[in-house]
Length: 387
Ligand SMILES: *Cc1c(COP(=O)(O)O)cnc(C)c1O
Image 1 (cartoon, rainbow, N blue to C red):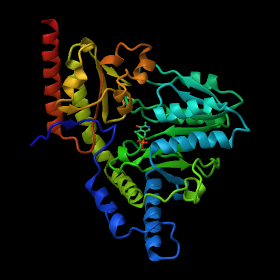
Image 2: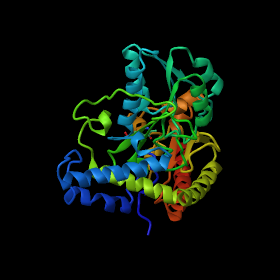
Image 3: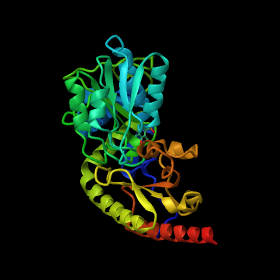
Image 4: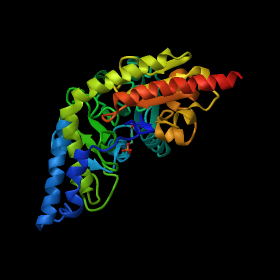
């Protein structure tokens, strides 16, 4: 049986895996200790759970456990990375390079840094959402301390040339931070091979709970230093004070184990379904693909319905399928996507953009239904439009 509406908004958040919930439950009622209680077994159990999870999270990205700082999510990890590095290296320089298509957490953190005297360069992207390495190279100055480029875009799925970016950064003695919230758990990431110095990611985008994330901070070649943005009891090696969310962190660890085990299998299936959906969507007249045709996360297809610009297609589609116009935050403000605007230089295609993002629990049946439903909806809207 098909349950409606069909959920195709996995880039906004994912359903938690049952195995993740199972792992979390005992830490609410049985092992409810505070990991900072060092003198009794309740505290020890909680601390053990956190350290076990830290190993699993580190293992997924090729890091060591000491390089993982748990936070309340990617937004906090991004704030800690950008503001913490800026504050730490302010005596070295005040220039940061990022991209126009970054997530709001990055852009707003950069805007804050600009308001207190830092200088930020916002790189442009081409029509497929990719930055140009020459533009990046030309933007580097003696005062540049940090390059912040996301791994995979949340709206289009476009994957940036992370390795080439990190090589440029390294060559110039600049730190490289990446918001890998959409890529982690979906594609293989190895912080050493990719040359990443700091990386933010989040449990709820990979079948874990909401409200838990992590910041990877490299400890060797180079040893990266960050100024904490939360003062208090000195938890997480002083990097993030506040009683850690033990059940959430245990769930995050489990989500990482599952991602590592099922990534290839999940991806093969998800990509096949995505490609089928994409092929059928592109058969509809006036439909164009937003994002890179190949260098793209396996679960996303973002398209614009150029013939349906003024009609409210998204509202009609949302009656039976939960999709969004770009990012969750952009759609709540009902403004056309700034990501697509940066790609195309205008809002023409941004106005009719719809993002379909699949996940571990998306079925063949749901994709078949979606294909039929989108075609029917577009047809009936075009008919009523021309009447
Ligand atoms: C969801 C998302 C974030 C924010 O993550 P939270 O854990 O919800 O704070 C940041 N960056 C990208 C690319 C995202 O998709």
